[in-house]
Amino acid sequence: MTDSKISGDFIAEDNDKRAAALKSDYAALGEKLARSNIDINAVTAKVAEFFVAVPSWGVGTGGTRFARFPGLGEPRHIFDKLDDCSVINELTRATPTVSLHIPWDKTDPKELKAKGDQLGLGFDAMNSNTFSDAPDQANSYKYGSLSHVDAATRAQAVEHNIECIEIGNAIGSKALTVWVGDGSNFPGQTNFTRSFERYLAAMADIYKALPDDWRLFSEHKMYEPAFYSTVVQDWGTSYLIAQTLGPKAQCLVDLGHHAPNTNIEMIVARLIQFGKLGGFHFNDSKYGDDDLDAGSVEPYRLFLVFNELVDAEYRGVKGFHPAHMIDQSHNVTDPIESLISSANEIRRAYAQALLVDRAALEGYQNGNDALMATETLKRAYRTDVEAILAEARRRTGGAIDPIASYRASGYRAKVAAERPAVKGGSGGIV
Ligand SMILES: [Mn+2]
Image (cartoon, rainbow, N blue to C red):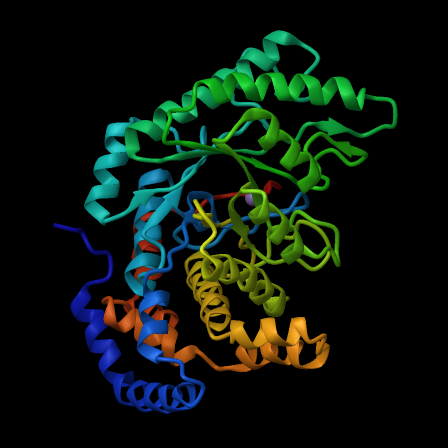
């Protein structure tokens, strides 16, 4: 029996207030789509089966290197975090899995699994951390981890990643995401080639420890914490890593980890073409790795990324199953609300991409009709698919308006009373 944080009865009652309006909006949209030979129920069914993992670290309030301003009722430990994650899933029915971060979430795997089962949550990719020092570790990562000049430090970082695989194995995860902050702050500080050689050798040791049905994701990031050079800085390097390690290694695209104006959807297409798209960290960005809420700044870019994913589905690309995860930081909002909103925006981009008339698009491309080709994408993007998203939630027991239902539930006030406020405002990115 699943332990609900927000009861199904409460959601159903709250939905009753909005059911008539949704029915009417859904019928109107269904009629409009039918004129383009699109079956709205088929789209709704696909949307209802599209899931994205929430990051355990996302339900805490984030911060910048300047300050962190705590929110109310912040989770004290992984079990509180899982409670918060389950609220997001109960309302959206879009986030049945959680991506853990070790050591932040380290605890007895049996207890993790039991708590997940109790809440009806599974576990997505594990995330290792060799970009900061744990209190009890022997060697510091100040000057790097998997690419460190010192063999003992590299071995310690490899060992940590293997421990993440072992914990993940015990709780049903099937992937490890590796992101390292390794790099340099001065020209000449490190040897680019030697650093990457050491990184590849260390990653090969991790790869050897990977179970057969697991995948290893390398996540690239242009800069920060190293500001002159970064060892895994772009998708080209990530591709070289995945190619060098073997078939279980793939690339993870974090939307925020690129220079402004980078054509991310094209990177996605390239990785799909060569079988190396492992998955995503969804978020949004204006300047750098801002970790803003998915779809909040550039919703059209998110749509264009999904256009590539749906195109791959449409073409029946073999073995195509990218992992969908959110990775963002919430500094000024209730993290639960931001994650609900982001899960909705991600599903929105998917739904809009499903509406693209792909046969027509191909015809315009082959006929060099640039205007009608782009108009075909825009036509899908301009469609207000809110009724599809709401109906997909309603049909699976979620909320028609999940943020309104969340606010009406009083969940935040309830946990604020149970969880003491976190004092202080120290810096630190979550
Ligand atoms: Mn990320």
